[in-house]
Length: 527
Image (cartoon, rainbow, N blue to C red; front, side):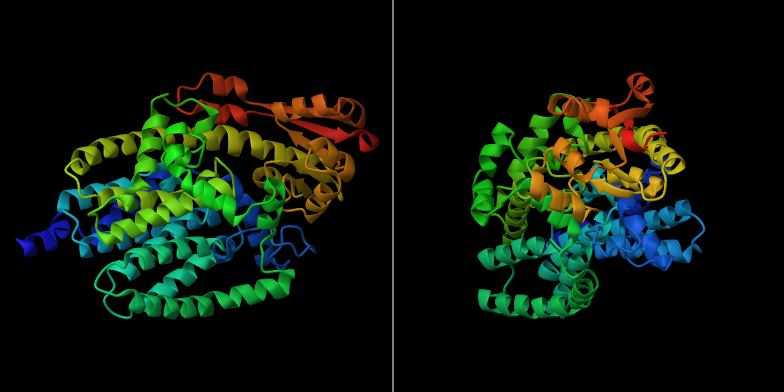
């Protein structure tokens, strides 16, 4: 009977088959949506400058660290170089493939881990399907973000901790080093899982041996990440990405005590809906509206449950480690970035949460798992429909059109103020003052002088152009009525709202948010 349980997960599928299923799903999503996420173009502008010989910079001649992920900027640079610098579309599609391969590799590592832990075959099968059909994970693995690599290295860490029988410390160090190359806040993921391991001591290892393993892995991780850390420090003058500096400046002071309070309040958030749990299993942009009202309380409760599994008695130690780490990550994402963290921050935490639910020792897991798979597949189908329209109509249509119009109408030396940096910044090619200043140390410095209100920043920086959504323009009119009537004049409205209103897709509120942009030009330079 024990041998039967041991080999049960492999009876349904192998690591190779789950790799292929995950890769096919990722590529199918790419083909259906032709997705290029907003933030990809922020990074790709630096990637392209590197290949073209201008340095790893957003603005030529300005050494500012305007991206967060080293892999997220270097892989697109390689894609641009290997496609002979001839086509942005070809480079993006090659990145789709690399992201899909990373996503599939992550699924394969997870399969090997649950196989080693002897999850029952039906639960193992459902868990793998939960992971590869998670809509945000599929989307952000192929749309130009670093998410596929993040999932790959987090899954590699779990395999190194729970399933690797030979040189586990070396593998763990390599996995952690890869995670740091993916995101510098990977240290939070590493710390959360390490604390969980020391708290629950999974497997047959005593804590003293786990300490030795983690210490060796830390040394390997340091050696793997040190080259980038040292180079970034020498090139930019600081190893801290300017994206982090700008966002930290915008959100204000954050403390470890505040993070601890957020973590302690997670069970309350499960019922009150005032934290990051809300977005863990919801589609991207859910808060703009257009999804069924019942979906949020259901997914919020499941997210909260997953983050509390570590408190339940008689659960296997490995599952409690992962649940504990998921709770730490959700507290971190709910406190430092904000109550509703950007959706691309969430997939790794979602995978850890799903792993925790799949590992529960309960007869309810199987019927719940079937219902959750149906819900997950429905979300993926509906989100695919939404993403295809968003790419065609809003991102590749409206936002790109704004950037191209600015490029055609602006003069050398002109500057642009806006919030959404990706499409507008890339296609305009202008020097940008984006809020909160990810590409612009000048904006961060100005905010420290005059504050974070947009009318104050615009008055201080005096950008040539403004690209505003209607709500942003209305707020400026309320705060400083003369700004958009005397200092600036309206030049062009880009409006696809009429087409958006007639669409029959879930999540339509996300499309409406970016369906209108108003471009203003500073009066003193207007013809």
